[in-house]
Image 1: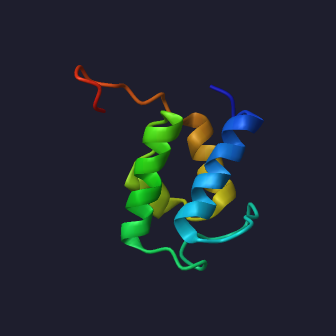
Image 2: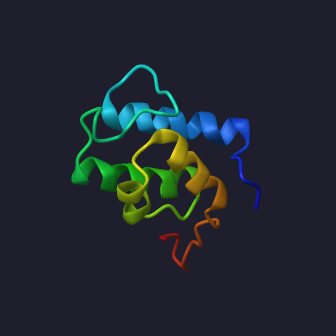
Image 3: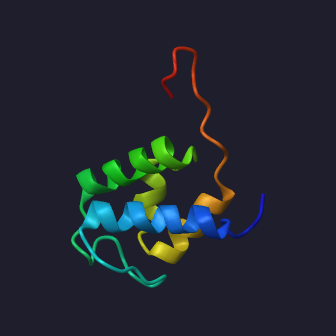
Length: 89
């Protein structure tokens, strides 16, 4: 898979990040926890990335890669989330 997320998907991830943190803009160097994020909002972020983007980004990925640019790189390398029978991941 590419090192970079396609621009449309990157923009979607940016929107999810801003929604979870309640911020109006994001920079690649922005740190999730410095902007007010915590473990529960990190869980929400990873869940929304899996649900809305279909990428297997787990809570541990967010906790270990709190800078937005680093999480973008993780998302670019993430496998597509597999949906189990019955429509739930």
